[in-house]
Amino acid sequence: MIGLEAVALQTPPLHTQLIRFDRRYIGQTTTLGGAGLFGRWRANERIALDFGVRSGSLRFQRAKTRDLVAQDLLLAELAALLYIAHGEIGHLALAGGIGGLGHQIRYSRSDGREGTQRAGAALFRVGLDIELLLTRIAFVISLRAYGVITDRKRTRASGTIFDDVDPELRLVPLPVFQTHMLGTAGVAYRF
Image (cartoon, rainbow, N blue to C red; front, side):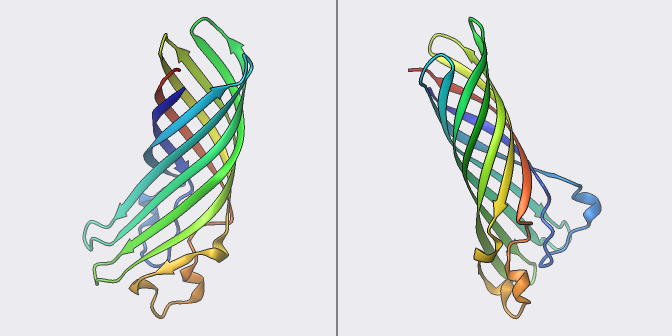
């Protein structure tokens, strides 16, 4: 099957020093919204391979000064699914996999200074998938947990906002180790 899905990705919040926001309005987690494209090939009744590309975006903007921080993520992953329950219409599977994640953080300040940071990360996932199968259409719901390892030292920073700043501020404002949660709901065409 091949399909499209809506994505909600829960991550730890950014803690950047380049543009400061009131922490009372950010909270302990942030949720990025996006979309995804996935393909699934069933090797037999119990095992399937899943490949997906998913995105998520989030914007923070100050109302008075119009300072903006934009976070965009792009995930590519490969997983194996083990079907543990079968019905006439519904199937339940456990999933595990690996992949890569690209972070992009853009800054825009009211004084005209702008900049972009990009970094990559490795990810490891475990999750639960539900498939509701019709003749040629399937509805797929997934809940996944990701372990994310970000390579902060390979941050690519560009833009005027990074002129004359401490080298530590040029690194993406993310910890090396993070945990993300992802929920998807999609529709697929079955071959």
